[in-house]
Image (cartoon, rainbow, N blue to C red):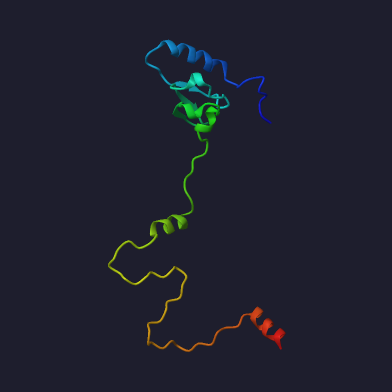
Amino acid sequence: MTRGVWKGPFVHPSLLKKIDKLKDQTKKMPIKTWSRNSTIIPEFVGHSFLIHNGKSFIPITVSEEMVGHKLGEFSPTRKFSGHTPADKKAATDGPATSTSSSAPKASPGATPKAAPGATAPASKPKDTKWQKKITLLKL
């Protein structure tokens, strides 16, 4: 449920006091805050904040597009360390960029194709249990 419009946006009172003090100064120091649930209001535009994410402080400079959002939205609390090693390897392999080999690369699970004119060794295909059942049902 959202906050009532008649109440107005929530901004921690200490943030408002700090913004009022910085309005008179020419050199604006970043404001250190733990109030992630405070809403960004137009008075915050141009000021820089250090927002706590639970472990460290993330520096943020407020712009016009941020008005109406919460301070915590711009300070992620979880660190994305990447996907599994197999996904990283697939991403680095990618399409071949070198022109030295003209033959296309086979995918990692594919069976190699025989050269034209070469005879393939004769092998009997193995029937699995479900294929045997299908052939029995057809009879």
